[in-house]
Image (cartoon, rainbow, N blue to C red; front, side):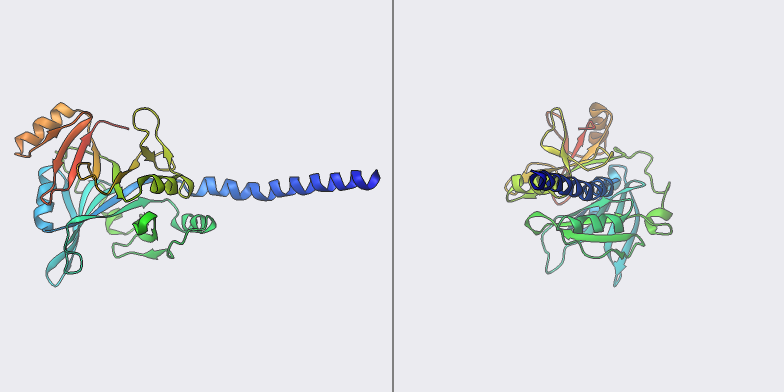
Length: 276
């Protein structure tokens, strides 16, 4: 009996020890993976200047740009002090105008990078990007590139705070991004299980909210679905937004929950009430 009793006690002690050892790791995951929100979306466009002028008609200003041999290689359209739309020109290797990548903002990229590695993911090492911010990338489902940034003091983005905020911009927030996938369900599972995104409640359960308190979201659509928007811009009043768009000569389609327009390459953009 004493040996049986001692064995049971030892087994109970081991179970308790495992729980104690695993608890800090679980807590560190919960603390380190929260995101500040969507930092930017990037598009490859057939004419950067033309697309930039389109966004200016929507009230958004070009904050800054990079050039190569006298031609714009990257333009930054400003939505607010922490959200941008990046425009890249098509190239011989990438001749099709299309969505390129989503960039998410983190408060501590080195900690976030380490947390993802603990989860078996393979982000590249944190580096300093051309604009002066910290950056790392990671391959997501179906080899789509996911980018992460941390705004740093002295970067182009930080130095542009309170500047280039179009007085008449039709939206002040990038609310959501649609991502096209061959297998949307599998992609959704990856974002939930590996990145701790979570479904929104209410009528928009198809949208996955970023971990944290930003309230911003992503949604996965079929690669064959060409009618859905790539980005969703939040507005306070759809009727006033429709009037403003029509006054600028921009064709709109009125949907059940929002207004839809297209950039010069036909990429759809939604104006919607929020949050979703």
